[in-house]
Image 1 (cartoon, rainbow, N blue to C red):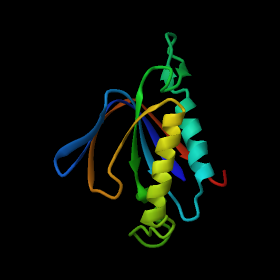
Image 2: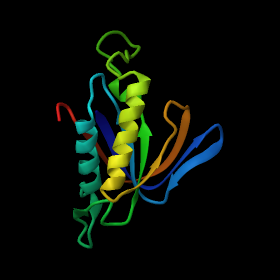
Image 3: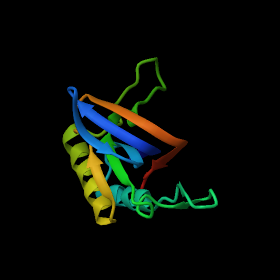
Image 4: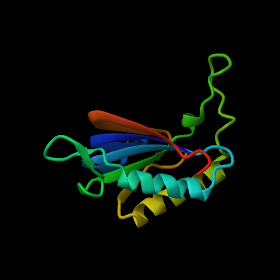
Length: 148
């Protein structure tokens, strides 16, 4: 599993012109599920995201997690994180997990994040989502659960 984590002031996600989820501040997390990924990888990412210290303290040092600052997480499924551009100009997505299994692991990761005490909002799995976000910093972290 892979995640792109962005610190944000606000994010709004809509589908078909209707707002589905909004967070006032916190983290927007784009989550990709690869072929053969397991629940243990979702557990690993949930724990890391919940405890990732990328919010600043009074001295401007990144010392607080999203939980510490009372922020929220918007979790968005994104199979395109597994786009392979090694050959040609059109990405291949053969490394992305099939939708049924990917959705299970996406939901599992959301559940585990909540169990770590994080308020989690979600996108709509498989939908054409429009996302407006106000990045903070910007701070963007890439995580790969690899063989966890």
